[in-house]
Image 1 (cartoon, rainbow, N blue to C red):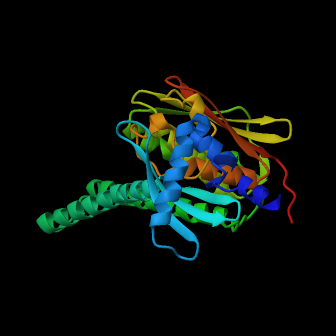
Image 2: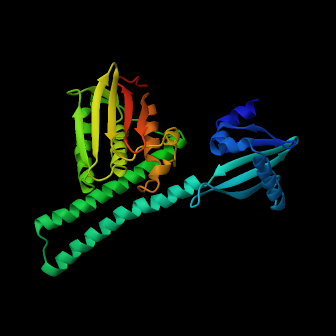
Image 3: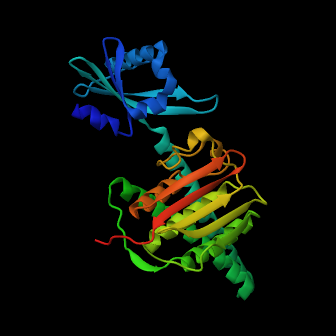
Length: 330
């Protein structure tokens, strides 16, 4: 049935309910609700959704309600539920609004931090000029560095948001070049060393090859490297170590980012590359939008490559990006 094939690939949870039974649920519904789908209480919950929708004002034959589900004592998921009557029963679509609302809340936080630094550095610079009529070169350079670094973080955040939107709409543009890749990786590691140093995290670079010329989009691969290193710094405790490796395997270029940070739970490894998703043990550890790893996956796939993760909770993680050395350019 063509309609069910469409439901199978939707990001929302979809159910068909008729004659007191759930006769269909798509893969997203199975993933979201798990074992509760087999419980009698879930059937009762569906009846509650139907009854609540029937009490709402109708727009055609479609009604929307909100459903709050407890995850633990302090966290809930909030969903918009659309219920539509059809000849044999009811079609229900459950849209998780938590991911997007969490995303926007984290986005505001992520933008506020560098803006506060820019404002503070500019205020101090202005104060020095007001007091002395001039600013000593070293003092001025320090303030300028903070302003430029924070502006770069804001640009990185905005670029992530724009590309996440483009990837969803299949509008991701690639500008491929054939050139050596190691100088760019080395430069990005050097730039990230300052951020790592602020957290007293040791960032090491270990190239297993002298250099390698590959075909790639420099901006997209730069973002892969930056996102993975930034992610490792974010979830690695003080005095931790991050190791960036580059190597060649057959006809592929390999980038590995190792850390001895908090690691990822086994049940979260399958979802961390989805938009707005974050590992459960990462939520209280550091702020984030949940789109960095999603973009790493998108950019790798756009180069006919892939990304894998090996991780153990409490031990650390290794993210491995594989890119073919040669690309077929259209």
